Image (cartoon, rainbow, N blue to C red; front, top):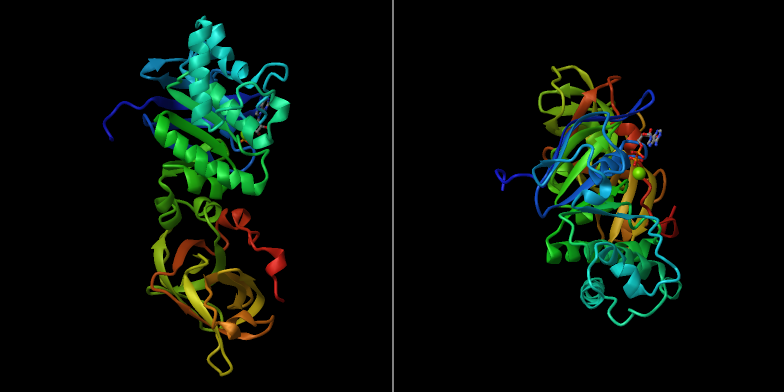
Length: 380
Ligand SMILES: Nc1ncnc2c1ncn2[C@@H]1O[C@H](COP(=O)(O)OP(=O)(O)O)[C@@H](O)[C@H]1O
Ligand SMILES: [Mg+2]
C-alpha cells in the first residue's frame, strides 16, 4: 500500500489571496481508491485545496500531480477529476437522464451509449426509474444523488466533494453518509470529501486530514486521530474533550482539592510539579451518585440521552468535565441526578491526555463544545 504511487500529490502548495495564505505549504498524498476527508473549521483552506486539485484555482507556489502527471496550469476540464458541490445546480429543463448524460454529450459520446452509461450511473445512486423526471420533481436528497451520478458517469480518477451534504437535513444527511460510503467502496473511485463536521468525517473516511489555518495538523485514520491526536487542536476538534487544570505528580495530574487523574498520552514534556492542562474524553471514567462523603465532584448538568447518561461535572476548582456512560434500565438513581448533587468519578487508567502547560498555547479549548446534547432530554 505504502509504496504505490499516490493518485494525487501536493508538494509545498501555497495559495495566497492578497495577503492571506489560504493554503500554506501543504504536502498531501492521496492513495488510489481511498476515501479521504479534508476536515477543519470554516476558513481553514479546505475548499481552496480542493479547487486547486480540480483546476479551478492555480497554486501561488508548489506542485500538484494527478496520476503521476504535473497538472499546474492544466485547465479543469482536462483533468481526470470531477467535483460535486453543495450547490448542485442541475439543469431544470432537462430530464434527469439528460442531466446525467450532459458531460458525456460534451465529450462526443453517441446518444445510445451515453444513455446506457447514464442509466447505469442512476442505478448506482438508486434512482433507476426516475430517468424522465425533471429535477424539481425530486427531493433534495434525490437531486444530490443525481449530481453524484452526473460526476460518476464521467469515470474520473478522483471525485472531489465539497460539503455535498451541507444542504440536507440531519436525518437525510446521516442516511446519505452511509450511502456515499457504500457507493465509494463499490465503484472504487478515490473520493476527496470536504467537511467541517467531524462526525461526518469520522463516519465516512478511511483517512482524515485535519486542517487549520491553511495547514494539515494531522493526517491519520479516525481511530488514530481520536486516540493519538498529534496536537491539542486535533484533540479538541475530533470528538468531545473537556480540559482541566492540574499539577503533574509522577503519572497523575493532581487537581485542586486532591482529585487525581491518571495520565496517558502526553503531547508535551512536563516536569513534576508543572502546572498543566489535561484533556478528558467523555468515556475517560465512570460516574455514580453518592450519599456519603466519598464524592469527588458535583453535578452541573445531567441528561438522559436515550441509551446513555451524560453529566457535566464540576471538579477541582470549578473546571467542568463532560462524561457519558451507557444507561441500564435499573440506573434510576443516576438518571435522577440533579445540579449540585455529589458524584463519584472513577477514572480509567491513562484517562488524561496531557495537552499543554497551563497558560501555554491550548487551541483545543476553542474547538471544544458540549453541543451534541438533545435539549429535550435535559432533566435538570
Ligand atoms: N477567491 C478568494 N479571494 C480572497 N480570499 C479567499 C478566496 N477564496 C478563499 N479565500 C480566503 O481563504 C481562506 C480559506 O478559504 P476556504 O478555502 O474557502 O476555506 P474553507 O473551505 O475551509 O472554509 C479564507 O480566509 C477565505 O476568506
Ligand atoms: Mg469551503
